[in-house]
Image (cartoon, rainbow, N blue to C red; front, top):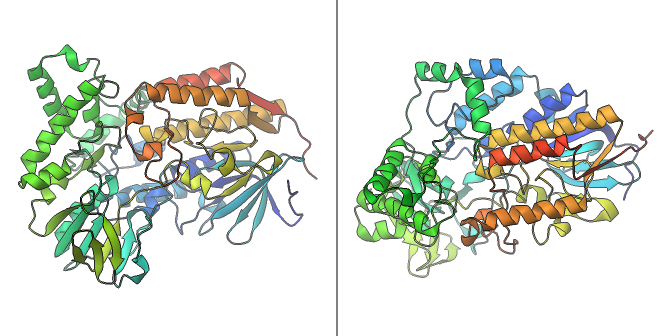
Amino acid sequence: MNTAPSMARQTDAVVIGAGFAGLYMLHRLRKLGLNTQVFEAGDGVGGTWYWNCYPGARCDVESMQYSYSFDEQLQQEWKWTERYPAQAEILSYINHVADRFDLRRDIQLETRVTSADLDENTGRWTVRTDKGEEINCRFLISAAGCLSAARVPEVAGLADFKGKWYHTGTWPHEKIDFTGQRVGVIGTGSSGIQAIPVIARQASELVVFQRTPNFSIPAWNRPLPQEEQDAWKANYVEHRERARNTRSGILYQYSLRATADVDEAERQAEYERRWQRGGANFTHAFNDIFINRVSNDQAAQFVRNKISSIVRDPKTAALLAPSDHAIGTKRICVDSDYYATFNRPNVKLHDLRAAPIETIVPEGIRTASDTYALDSIVFATGYDAVTGSIDRIEIRGRAGVALKDKWSHGPKTYLGIMTAGYPNLFFITGPGSPSVLTNVIVAIEQHVDWISRCIAHMQASGQTIAEPRQTAEDEWVKHVNEVADQTLFPTTKSWYMGANIPGKPRVFLPYVGGFGNYTVICEDVIKAGYRGFAFSGQPQPA
């Protein structure tokens, strides 16, 4: 491949993205003595939580667990205000971390990485940005995030719309006031379910365009008393260790009982208890919900019954109740007053399956059955998840092979951390790792720590190149698929499967074998002398 021009800036490592993953990766690389340059497309740090500032944006993992654990003083000093943190509070936390560890001086904002080429003679990468810069580095690390490539569907007429339109994943940072407006929201995934109740309280009219209904569990969000935080912090180390050994990296109540182990009355009582507790822990009411369709159907029916008890109009309730997929096999949503919002007189639900959008007209949206006059349109249409942020960068490895071409039939990695043919290219929460099925900060810390240990191993042994062996990658991809096939996940058309992106291969993207099991595998790889990886020493360039 192309040798880096002499004018290219030299550094040890380039990190793509300055969200939770990029900040912690920078912190660890500094401790290894590596000069590091971080590039961030936004004009502030925060990654997903910088861009996702739409109305109602909130984390679905509780505050006390959705934070870094690598620094004890940091986790003791920060104070949260709510059970589930809102976007603004999470962004404040991220900025606090950036300042506390003096990370900003190595972060270049408003800069997007466009390409990266491997020089096989030196084992180094030439990275190019949209500012015309070239940076030559030894290690290239993607911290671009699993949910950062926002997807606006191709809808005819959008350019002709006279009003304003927005995407929840690239929301403006100035306050948007929908008071008195006629608003259309397209999409009822997690971001739509969070935004719709807030927009409904402002808009004079709100039309929700739904293609696929999703299951949502109430958050029952509330202020977080100081004494509750103090009690948690007193045992933070123990809590963190226990969380890392769970299937999702979250201290949930994981049932040891199968659905059939209890009678109907106890089953309903358990569902009700989980519903009243709130949050995604509902899907762990019994240990076979993700693998047994009969058990899953019973949990799903409980939620459908709740929907029909909340939504007064039977037709609307029926449209909001999912019937085409197993509960939890699409991302389970957590909401505040979502279903009750459809009882408001200013809110209407439009079924896109019955009457699809034909075109956007200057005055609004025309479907097969109606034309809706709108002042604003909100696309809550999600992301090109897990691989989208990587695919939009032109990455070429050995023999000039583009990573997009290698992954044309689905991503292939070893442990979700590296891919054969692309030495010293690391992914944080990449495809084939637990990533989006976990408390992502726990997954990020585990990956960053593993990558740091790998680089430290290279430093200690005088090696400059690390790359997974093709056989190890093939075995891992096979294992990821086999584990997924033991669950109900592949039965559903979801963004976990890439089904929301036209032409994207239908492959289950994350590793569903459980975060605790995954970390054991990663540790075993290290104990076996980095089994499945090849290391080599290359002369450093002049």
